[in-house]
View 1 (spheres, rainbow, N blue to C red):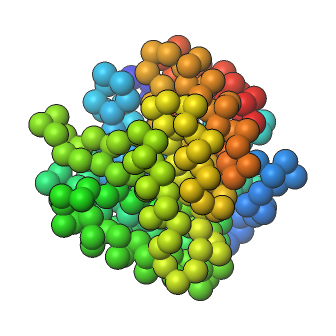
View 2: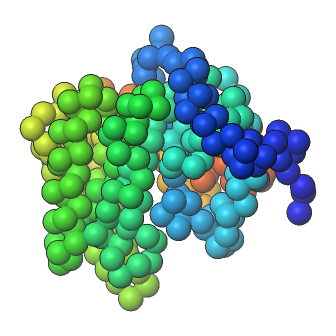
Length: 295
């Protein structure tokens, strides 16, 4: 295993001896508008660890090495055309202290209580950022995960809390990105339904949450049949970004799906994580540049 770079070992010492440095770095960070001159967004997602979701492909602990993850994130964020990052509080604060968030869009992940594989996975409590935390740190937006299983009462608690969070974010004039899915349990675990009807329904539900949708964005997957995306995305006028997800061993097919959906009028960009940070060929810069090129 490669030892951490000097900057990362300094980060550990800084955290131990000067915890107030986090707030100082947040206050001093150079900010930018959510949408830049291109009107498009390319966001790198790294909020998986806070939900205990550490696997990439066949490696169950790929994202468990924080030093390695931070190096990959710094490389990705430095590539031309990358607008920002989505992560939990600890990862964002690491990046703040490393100076990697200057002039970047910062999205804080909010509900991480639905731990991967847990019996309570769909009772997805808001254990991450609160709206007040995002505002006090000067972050640019929040993200919440909304998984709905009609057979699981825990989904109702998540739905209700998500609606109130939309209200709180709107009161602070902070955008909130909602990632909605219809899902169900199987013997192998929780499975999301990426059929056109399910994705359309999830978009309709997410769009109607809260007392106003003025600050609501959608973070949506490409359907099993990408030809359905035109019809699916007509379910809402809210701005949306595509959820990249894992691309498996066939990234070219995934890229073509994203390319087609990016042409739709409400789709403003991409939020992609593991497939860019942990590409099969190990070339993080190349994977990120390819994704940026789709925009």
